Amino acid sequence: MSFYAVDSKRQSMRSTGIVNEVKEWEERDGKRRPSETQARDEATGMPLWQVEVVFKQSSFGRESMATAVVEVGCPHRPVTGEFAPVEFVGLTVEARVNKAGGLSEMWRAERLVDEGKPAASSSGSGQKAA
Image (cartoon, rainbow, N blue to C red; front, side, top):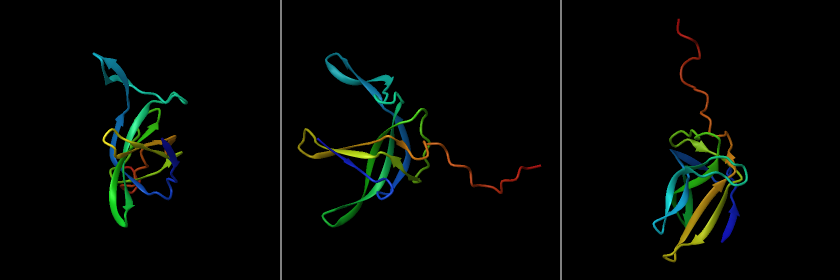
């Protein structure tokens, strides 16, 4: 397996607005299944989240949009706007050969640049109504 560091500032990504918990896997009835327990980062102990992103890729000279899920630790559910730019710290991708013989990618990051907090509201004039 090969891990590659990705410069999140150069690989522009946009959030789809979809964020899900990463679940621990458990063995039940001889099969591996996701449990009800949220997984935690082994190094930091932070709860793990899957942040769905889209980005432009180029393959054989043809550009297209790709969707990926980036696993990231955060103490709370990250809040990302739909199609808002998103930036990660310590972003990596692991390339694997799957059972069908194709390539699959696993994206991970240490954290979101803004910690996944909602941006300050830019709507309105900033004045309180009387």
